[in-house]
Structures are given as structure tokens and as C-alpha cells.
Amino acid sequence: MIRNESEYQTAVARVDAERKRFAEHAKAWKKQGFTAAQVAKLREPLESFHMQLVEEVQSYERLKRAQFEEFENLDGLGQVLIGLRIARGMTQRELARRMDVSETAVSRDERNEYHGITVERARKVLDALGVRLVTRVEVEPMGVARKSRGKAR
Image (cartoon, rainbow, N blue to C red):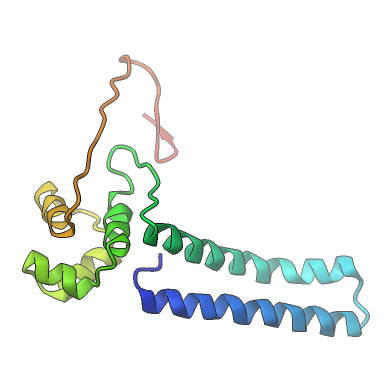
């Protein structure tokens, strides 16, 4: 997950450089006599990693526009907290100052995607970001199997 503008700029530059490198590789492979099908096979593993990086760039751009994915049962809350900081255009340093904690603490929390934080800590982050989180509770009939994190409960 891209967490700041510097990482974003680096990722965008890598995406552009990889696109150019793909074109150079394809040209060289064709020159060596590889067929179009063989070139496509050679590109597959390179493009797989490339597409992952492109998705991270697109995800960061969505966060900057304050477009968030829904999350369920607090799974993904950490990514939303990071995304809210990004959408606010706030640095980790600024968030730390507003929360009256060290920048190192914010950096650590974000690196761990806020895993294991308390409800009070989440509330403090939301307050520092000037955000109100609204939830909806859906009660399902007892005995109905549910999938959570890919496992039936």
C-alpha cells in the first residue's frame, strides 16, 4: 500500500519505466525471432508484477479523491484510516502532532495498518483527521452461515 506522496511519485516513475522496458524487451525478442505468442508468454510474469504496482497507484489516487471501499466487521479499518489521512492531504508528522504522539508511533501504526489498535486509539485518529465514521448494523438470523475473511463461521 502506498502511504505518502513520495512513495506515490516513486511508484508512478517505476510504472512508466517498466512500460518502456517492456517495449524494449518485446522489440529485442522479436528481433531474436520469437513469435508474437512466445513474446506474450515471456511478458506474462513481468506484467503480473507491473499490474500489481499499477493497482497500488490507482488505489492511492482513489484515496486522494476520498473514494473508499466498504469494509465489514472492522476488517479493513486500518486501510481506511490511512486512506483518510491521505485524502485529507495530511502527512504522518501532521497527524502525529494533532494526536500528540510521536511520528514514529503513527508510522508504526500505519506500517501495521493499525492492526490491534484499541477503539479509543481509532477514535483519536478519526478525531485528529476531523472525520466522522458512521456504521450500520445488520443482524442476520442465527444459524445462517457467513463468510468472513474467506472462512465460514
